[in-house]
Image (cartoon, rainbow, N blue to C red):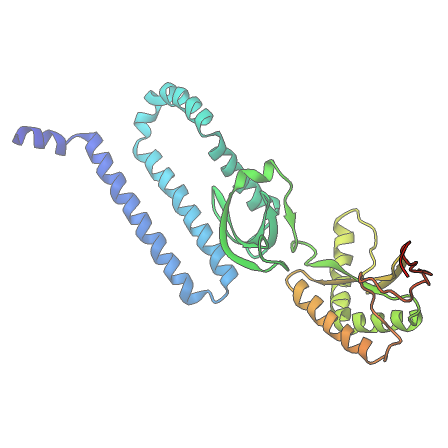
Amino acid sequence: MDIMMKELLFDPTVGKIVVSVLSILLLVIAVKIMNRMLGRYVPSNDLRYQARKIINLLGYILAIFVLSIIFSDKLSSLTVAFGVAGAGIAFALQEVIASIAGWVAVSFGRFYRTGDRVQLGGIMGDVIDIGILRTTLMECGAWVKGDLYNGRIVRVANSFIFKEPVFNYSADFPFVWDEINIPVKYGSDYLLTRKVFEEVLTEITGEYAAKSKTVWKNMTKQYLIEEAGLEPMVTLIMNDNWVEYTLRYIVDYKRRRSTKDTICERLLKRIDETHGRIRLGSSTLELSSAPDLGIRILPLEGKQ
């Protein structure tokens, strides 16, 4: 028994395994200490998150580097075996490999970053974490309207960036266009209606339009894209039932619902102040008059 223990203690392979375990343990402790220090010395959440990701990645790279040095004399004899096994593993884990490739593409290809609002794999939400295999989203929409959080956290494989389009609501242009359609009855004051609607839009969304001009100008320098109408706009069409005004405006991508609520509330107040000069249309039926039917009731035969 003692001889076996001595052989194990002086076995080079056992010694390399012990050194490997101790090295990995020291790396894990060092990574944890550095991550804790970030909370003290890095006040920004974004910078702290990015620094934590870089530290973890460097920890993985150092671990692989240390193991390769320790077992360098064994690698040459295992080259063929690793080649055969690698082919099988690559086929079995092709989705995992695609996700890792997706992580590399996201990290260096500017698809999205943490804090962006995206639609990925059919899921819309804010990116709260980008891992090696999956991107974590705080989901918006579904049964909740107005692009608000619904409380679900969704993890989407990074491989989806190669399979489906990636919609980014906030990367280069953190604004979206929105519209409100308002039916107005025939006989209203059309000029006053347009004036009121334009004034309300300018009061509420004019700030977004001013901010978006600088951002859009930078986009035209980076992409082959034409100039767009960033100012609030009111257009008019006629149909069988009423006159329909379309209010088009630009808004911050995270304030679409609150801005629409403010616009509608302000519009209702301004419409009431016109005392009937602006009348909203509706799909209810209104019977203005009934024709004379001319019905006569004749007495039955044989009766007086």
